[in-house]
Length: 176
Image (tube, rainbow, N blue to C red; front, side):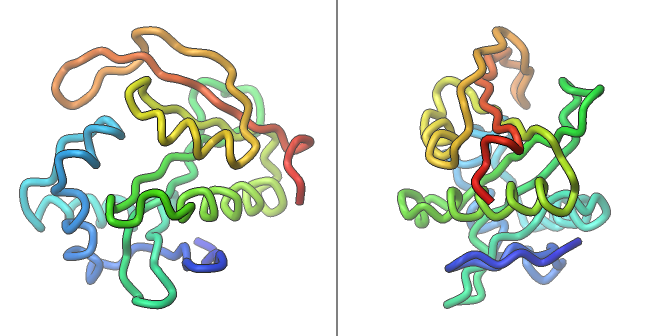
């Protein structure tokens, strides 16, 4: 897994020693549900998720350069809705104390650059639930285009069925 640097952050592999930092944001009631997962109940749950991230090599920790604190995660996953093209799907989560500072936008831009230049990806998509408008603004800020809304397409941790708002960006649309 490549380490990716932004102006203020380092996108790096997760370490088991990051468990307290992850739990600090993953336990909050306004973080996980916005991404479709239940808030973490304890550090053991965070440790289990970190172990899963380590084995998958698809999810980076977002570490602030100034404090060395992990404040979120960003992933680049296979996009199962586009199996016939070289595609990826980006997803992210950030500690609320860092919302509104363009940290995720900064991280998305560099991860997209990496996917287009080093992974030879043709299209990157991003999805969010209709109530999570902040994620839509991130995609728009990063040059993604609104594709449409997949109605009743996602079942989350509590059994709720939600729409998915879809954005994407083509390699030809991204300024390297």
